[in-house]
Image 1 (cartoon, rainbow, N blue to C red):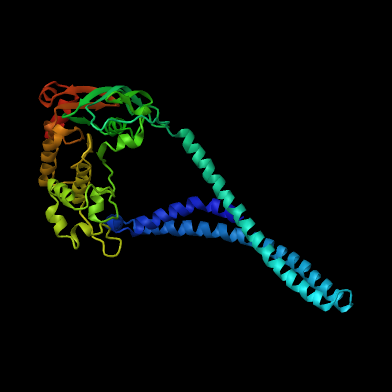
Image 2: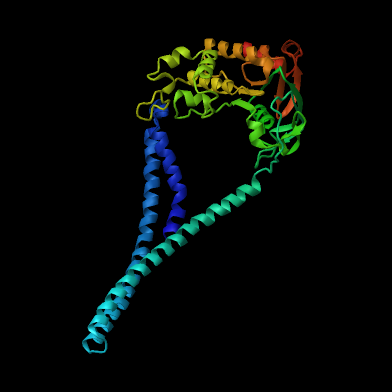
Length: 402
């Protein structure tokens, strides 16, 4: 019954936890207040709490009846045992020393039996949750793509996509439909297109975060579907659109627990590269400052500063493939300039992909890939595409007409 009640309440508990998080997290406080969301969040928190409490109270009478009935039955048998023992002792059928030994034996047996029942019940109770977990893991195993164990060279010189198709579960149309391209070491490739055109999905396919439904993604001839994913991701650095603001120290937010040295030289190098030295030196403990204002002693960065730090995180990895998905969307002009200067400086040592809506930023790219509804519709240099009269030229014109 406890399991059934928990099973009924688990969904509401999760949503209630979300409501509590949104209502109390300091980063969203301004929006909660300005948009009048406090009352809405509190209403749903209380409504969900009432539903959880109601289910618990509904189950309580049944649980009490079960406890009462079993306790009464146990008491009857226990009283019968003591009465029988007393009768045997008073009538002389057993000697008093034997009766005293029987009392100790009964008490010892009761204690052992109680522990046996308690632990047995706990095992049964836990097994219900373990069965759910096993079912979930089996389902996840069935739905997860099966990957191989091939290794990837330390130095990757070329990535090739051959008619790659990917469709998200539950969607009617593929997010990427038959994309083909090649990227070589030393090149900067810019991927542009309107929202929902498949840019970010294509970047995930290139890194092996997603595996293609059709077609192949080859890293120096090795199909990512057959490659060891850890070997692939070890050679990849990604700045995603929705980046994580880890509640860790500044240093760990750059190294992500994978320091290259026992000193902070490489960390400060990327801090300088993204123009964050002054901001970090102003923090209370500099690289040792906890970047989580909601925790005691923590500090907070602005959105643009966080984005610079995330770019530094990717640069710190020094991998053959660098992917930046809208890397400067929250930065000021100075920060954006510093990031793109660093991208150009290190481009010769790696393959670089920049996904952006800021079309002027694509001037730094050797090639520009234009996507529309999951397909590659244009591909070439900035100067050629801007004069070709296609989608890219239209988007550039719209960007200027403001």
